[in-house]
Image 1 (cartoon, rainbow, N blue to C red):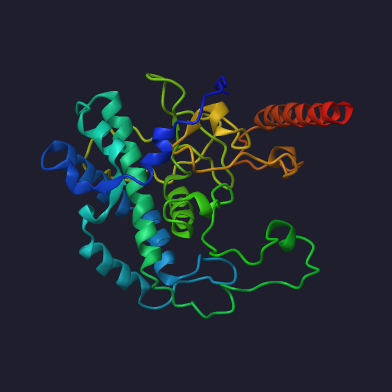
Image 2: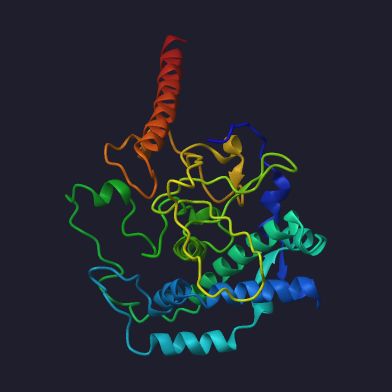
Length: 317
């Protein structure tokens, strides 16, 4: 696991979430052309097509909803042909960093990857906001179990979630620029890339690409683009395995780990909230080896002991 360092909240980053501009701000030239091809390459993958089609359909595929409604894929094709890259609104800070980077440099690659992920996220946001769902009044979308259900109300004390397109680590709709639609964006991004794409922000020049275990899929997926034409076979989604074992636990605050895309994307795990690292069942996607799980559980135990000592100290005062 990468070393952890505490850092202060970057207020400029917090403000930047409201300072978004059109991709037309890139102007014409190689930066725009390469980004346009990168976004189109992602959209052309099978996993992207089926993921975004589910948003148009209105429900994620599951045992209760096994196939898309008739005509959804055709509607997706039409939306794709009508798609205008300039309709995407991206952080002005991110666009500036990409625009001033030299094509082929590491900074250029990292910002290109970030822009591709953010663009994919924003496309999912746009699709959700189109309100094309065929299940607006369907009992599946708003279903709630009886009040004595042993599990549901523990995780959903306020009732049914506002959307079934949700990523467990990214449901803080009140602090997202696009609210619930951003939650849908994280869900789509995670499915398409193999995880929400995050970066090492700890200090200038630090290495991007530390993996964050981010249930239900690993959190960071860094794609190093060697060429800018469509690949013969898609590498997406990219999942963790024994050759990719560096992990930073999402249960730890982003201000401490320094691993995130936006500081406002997740809230710290509460002292009384369930720590997923302490489960006695191993998830081979989150933890490729037993050693990975044991190391994460040790970190969770240290966190729990710290809180226990804090409580004892408060009682003694």
